Structure formats: structure tokens, C-alpha cells
Amino acid sequence: MIELKDVGKVYNASDGDHRALDHINLTIADGDMFGIIGESGAGKSTLVRHLNLLERPTEGRVIIDGVDITDFQGKELRELRASIGMIFQNFSLFQQRTVLQNVMFPLEIRREPKAQNAERAHELLRLVNLDDKAKRYPSELSGGQKQRVASARALANNPRYMLCDEATSALDSRTTMQVLDLLADINANLGVTMVLITHSLAVARRVCNRIAVIDSGHIVEEGTTDEVFTNPQSEVTRELLGWGSDSASDRADGGDSEGGER
Image 1 (tube, one colour):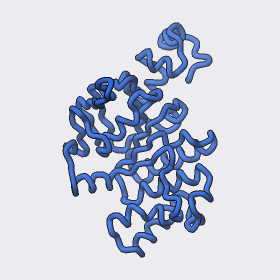
Image 2: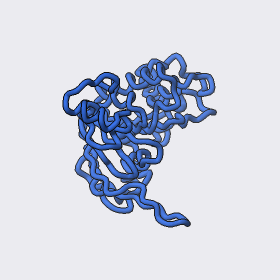
Image 3: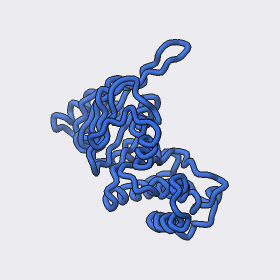
Image 4: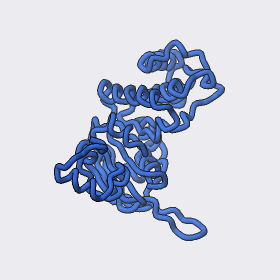
């Protein structure tokens, strides 16, 4: 389980302090496909980078599996990050490495035996249906294939958690659905808890069981996906859904829902 307790993040700039996160309290249960939704600049990526301490909170605590990780350094921090996979929007693959070598990279950092690394990498490439591309380079792959390689690499150390920061935003609609289905399979079959950062309501609705809506560094709404989509409580969420105040009121009262999300 991941817990954020009163987490705040302030950046110091020449024109004054900027508060990117403001008293965030959030719990992500084991097994969740948890979506964090918001517009560009809302604080989504800043929030998710606190979960593996790529960003450290200015205030508050980050707790994983009952352990306060906020001040982890050195070996503790390296082991923490090994247990949390991460997938980025731009794939972040090494262009001079083959697909197989990209997937092996996290294992090489841990100095695992080379033969064992290759065996594990092939296993993961079979999982994402890319074992036949093991000797190819990223430049020879489609966007969806690159994201599958990134997913395989993120699984190399058998993580308990996977953070997906706008992982499908650079993909076309069909490829996005394929990658989302892969992430859902990983969640269901491997028990990896997923945290998906997205501005896309369609992405969140397809795979997430719970979502939180963030705006200007504040969590403005949280609940099951069905609850938030069918009965949004905040004006920000209603705007994201494309609901005017009148139509939102009609839906909450059980009125005609034609043209809404549900």
C-alpha cells in the first residue's frame, strides 16, 4: 500500500516560491489500477515522482507498505527504486542498445549473472509479445512496440508497483488500447499495483478501478471510477467530463444522461 500524508512540494524560483503540491493525502491499495487525472500543469507528474523519491516532499511523508521512505538514501533508496517500475511518455529507451539489452539494463545495474539476465529478459519479451524483436533496435520499432519494451524493462526487477507517467499519450488510439490492455493484464496476472498518470478520461475509464482528480496541486476528488464518472462532486471534474453545471445537476438527479460519459 502507498500512502501520501500531508505531502507538499514547493519549488524556489527567482520570481518567488511555487507550490506544486498542497497537502496531498492519498492511499493506493495493493492491486489497484489507480488513475491520477488532471490537466497539464495540475501536478500529476510531480505527485507520481514522489512515490519513488525522484522528487522529495518539502513537507509531509511518503509511506510504502507501512515504512516511511521519505528520508531514504543510499542502499535503501536504490532498493526502493528497484521495487518500483516506471514507464515514461517518451519511452526512454537506449537507442544504441537492442531490445533485449534495453530490458536487461536494470538487471545489469544490480550485477546479476549475464546468462540469467538474458533469460529473464527473453521471458519478459515473451510476456509482451516481442521476443521476436529481441535483436532489433528501438528505431526499428513502432511506438506501441517501444512502449511494450519499456513495460518489459519496468518489470525486470519483479516490482510490486509500476508508475506510468502519461505512458500512452504519444500513441494513436488503437495502440493506446493495446498498451492499456497489456498493463491491465500485468496488474491482474502478476499482481503489480499500477499508478497511471493521465489527462485522458478515456484511458482512466478503460482500466482504472479508482481515480483521483488533481487541480493546481490539490486533490479535488477521489473515488471509484464509476462513482467519479457518474456523479462527479467537484466543478473541476465536471469540466473535465464536459458537463455544464445544469447537465451535471440533471444527471445527479437521475435525469437524461444522453451525451454524457455514461
